[in-house]
Length: 117
Picture 1: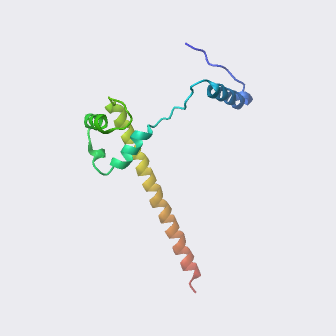
Picture 2: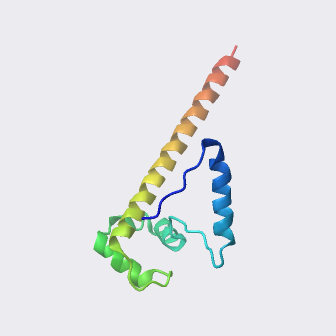
Picture 3: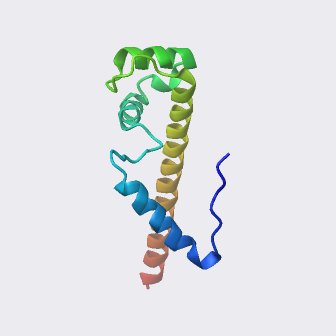
């Protein structure tokens, strides 16, 4: 097991920057994203058209046939987790929009009531 470096509290930012620069200067380095952009786009387009109703295995079969990412076999478990993450993000965004509209409308009504003689 590889032992991790120990840093003094003030040196953590410097060490992080140095580690990042070293990784970035490594040949053929590419950042690893948590989401797959192709799959995220398919979830975004297919959500509301029945993609949210598919079972785990049906979801894997659908992506095996229709996905443009080039993989021949998709993990149904990973796709289900990504779909659930997308659905919770969508719910949070809709809730936030609803709350902001409620606050804006509420502030507007207060301003109108104050402006009336």
